[in-house]
Image (cartoon, rainbow, N blue to C red; front, side, top):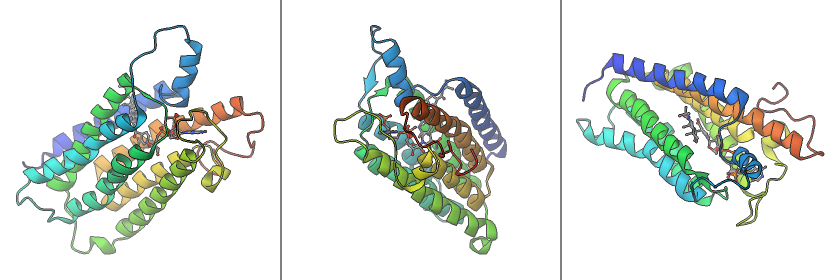
Amino acid sequence: MQCAPSLVLVLSALLLALGLLLLWLNGHSPSRYGKHEQERQDAAAEGRRAPHLPARCAWFLQELPSLLVPALLLALSSPPRCASLGCRLLGCMFCGHYFHRTFIYSLFTRGRPFPLKTFFFSMLFCIYNGFLQGYYMIFCAEYPDDWCKDIRFTSGILLFLFGMGINIHSDVLLRQLRKPGELTYKIPQGGLFAYVSGANFFGEILEWFGYAIATWSLPAFAFALFTLCFIGPRAHHHHRYYLRTFTNYPRSRKALIPFIF
Ligand code: NDX
């Protein structure tokens, strides 16, 4: 398989276009899963409940392609080993994140059942993004021998790791709000939740901008912007949900960016 720059350009542009579409769609109402799914369920209590998957099964299966697709591409590359720096960056950063998301986050989540329709689109998304990131980093990315000393690489890696730490820590704090089997929502406490309602989203956004800077690649920047467009508004809708639901919700908290927004 060879690098086709036009394919990378088109797929990156489509990813960005999807992000802008979701920014527009979600600006009005959030993607219907999690706490925002619940609100619709409550409102249509007498209606027929759409098919759902257990959260652990849904998150495991929908995130798995983000790992499998780059691994498949790597197996197709010749020589079939991670020779280039780009490929190693993909492995350590991108696949490291999705190893956690697929095998750790998914298996410990205490989330509510996941809507089958959303699951289907999520899996499609992860196949698409796994292909784009994997294809570019394995077949296209070229870095000078001293890239690891470049300020973009060092600052990007640090931002990625800082964001990943915030994201994982925040998701653990959310999980600890519930006992096994519970599905109620409580006021998140601790860590960056002291400053923002979407602490896990803030960490994830930092992560992917860090990845984009470290790899300095169009697909990675497209994915970072997509992430901002999708979970940025989600943080805003979470924030509004908390202010509506909990009269004692800390008013000093912001939605996504500490002290700013
Ligand atoms: N999943 C990324 N539509 C998305 C699934 C939906 O990983 O194209 C994007 C991802 C997908 C979306 C994905 C892409 C775009 C799609 C969309 C569906 C349609 C859309 C495909 C793939 C699309 C068309 C085709 C029309 C254009 O019960 P519960 O689950 O709410 O419990 C929650 C719990 N919790 C609390 N518990 C107690 N008290 C509280 N106050 C609580 N608040 C939350 O914590 C969950 O178990 C858990 C986390 O919940 P929440 O809502 O904070 O985070 P969530 O949105 O579930 O994300 C979980 C993690 C998080 O770290 C986040 O950063 C990361 O996944 N994520 C999520 C979304 C996208 C993404 C990362 C990314 O783009 N990088």
